[in-house]
Every structure is written in structure tokens, then in C-alpha cells.
Length: 264
Image (cartoon, rainbow, N blue to C red; front, side, top):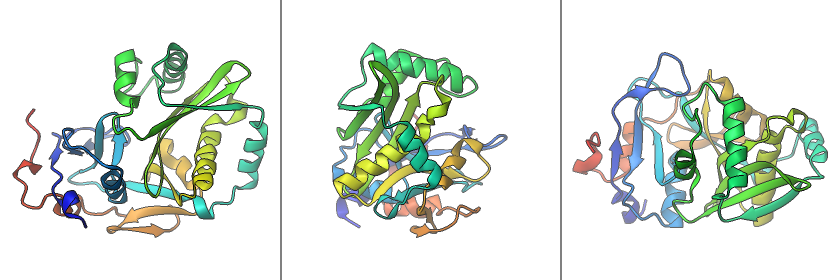
């Protein structure tokens, strides 16, 4: 553990409604947004189960629940299933472009349509341009935006951060009118292929949550590793207990008076 990691200040939110599990309250642990994170620090935080959303790097810190477990697929050992190979062949006609921004209207309109069609019951509905910019901007300077085109039509956008040991899948949105393409699956397969081409061993998929249908897709990518009991373990996606968040805090700025609830 490096001294720089120990110096990071973290804050906890007040309890709020859980976005994933009904009848549950959530608390979130945030890295001080004023903290400059190098690629090394960002990678180390990811190894402790943290994720990025916009300018914020966070992880769950719930008092009575450890359901959210950080997950990653071993890109260096990944072999696609028959279904996944079929999906890749089906999408082989798509054209890939990479950009450093998705501030354009074309990308936002696809995002807006996706949220309205697929997540009208979620926290991101109704979609708004300022929320889109805040959520998907590149706060750490390491994001790549992968765009998939069907001819001249944009059909999918995947946001991924590059870290020292892999890619972090931040978010994907796509044309909901093309279900036969399975564009969500293709987006993950794309990131795995990109990690393999870069010689990176992992693709971080975010939190695997037992009992949450929206997160169950992560079990389709093997070998899958979960951050359990303070270490990454390759295992089947049966219910596990994640690491104690108090133990994680002890690794970050021990004795730091700023570790309480952020009053700001």
C-alpha cells in the first residue's frame, strides 16, 4: 500500500434509497473530488472495489448490506461462448470509431432515446443534457468512447476507462430498436477484445448484485472474479459477502477526521 493511497480523503453520504434493491437504504463512500488521481491511484482504488461516475470515484458503504460486489472478467483468459460468438458475427458489419468526447448532439440523442425506452423507471429518467454531461464526462482524463455505426447511423456508445491493469466499463447506451443485435452484449465483448489487444488482463464490469436482474448479465462472462473478503477471487456467481467497507476505509487515510458524513 503506497503512502499516497493512504493520504486519500473519503466521505460518506447520508442514507438514501437504493437504486438496485427494493426496500433497501444505501450509503456511498466517495473519494474527495478535489483529490487528483493518477493512473496508479485510480488503479489501486479499482482494486479495492471503487468505480467512477463523472468526476466522482465511489463504492458502496452500506451499514446492513454487502450485496454490491465489485466484479471483473479475466480478458486474458476469456473464451466467448457459442452465443457470444454468434452475436459478434451478427455485428461484424458495424463500423467502430473511438473518440475522446461524446459532447455532440448525435451521441446525446441516442442516450436520450435509450433512457426513455429502457430506463423510464430509473434514477436517470427523465434524461437531461446536464446530467448526461456530468455522468459521462471524462473526469480523470483516461476515458475512451467507442462508437458503433450501422452505415452512417450511430447505434451504440460504450464509455471505458483505461487503467494500468485493464479497462473499466463505465456505461453503455444503444439503439433499443435493434434487439436482434444484442448491442449490450456486443459492447462488453468489444471491451474484452480491446483489453486483449492492449495486453491488459482485466475488464472491470462494476458491481455484481445478487437478486438484481439488471446486474445478472455479468455472470455471462467467464472467468469472472469477485472482490470478496478483501481479495479478488475467481468463482461462480452465487451469493457472497463483499468486503467490510470499514476495512476498506481503514486502508484509506486511517485516522482521517474527514471520513465522516459529508455535510456539504
